[in-house]
Length: 179
Image (cartoon, rainbow, N blue to C red; front, side, top):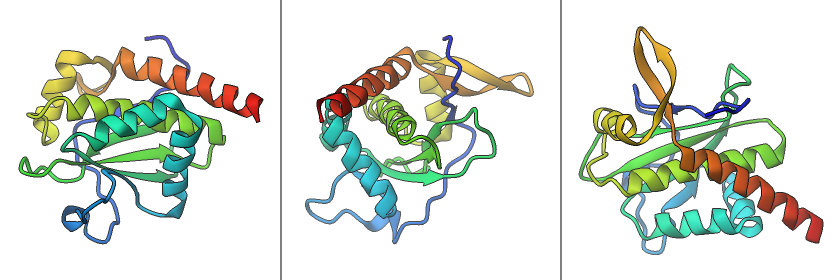
């Protein structure tokens, strides 16, 4: 994949997120795609409002068993725009966290969220992906290695996610032009 920006999919660890009780928060009617704070919730809301693709991705996740937490955070590199990983390695309840690089251009944050939501849909479609090891197996099958660490792939990318970020960016610019 040729792209100046790198959206890395980490499989070697689980992501910890500060939530009230990420594993015990399934209130009736609660969305499966959740912001951990007001800024992340606004990011999700803006994506689904301004992008048909973003709305479709969230709809697909709402029909799945996967719970997705979203947060914005500062990364130590500008090459990384987002990542996704399991919050817990419990196969009885699949919970992932998406981290979006921030602060960045807001369109970039929204397109990165769309990109990572595509990865979440890929994970949701693979019920056996429920921890770091099974997630690695999934992305060895469906993804392309992006980086190598000690001779092994530690992050992957899929063409579907790369295409999604382009499509979301296009939709965001179209919605801005219409307003």
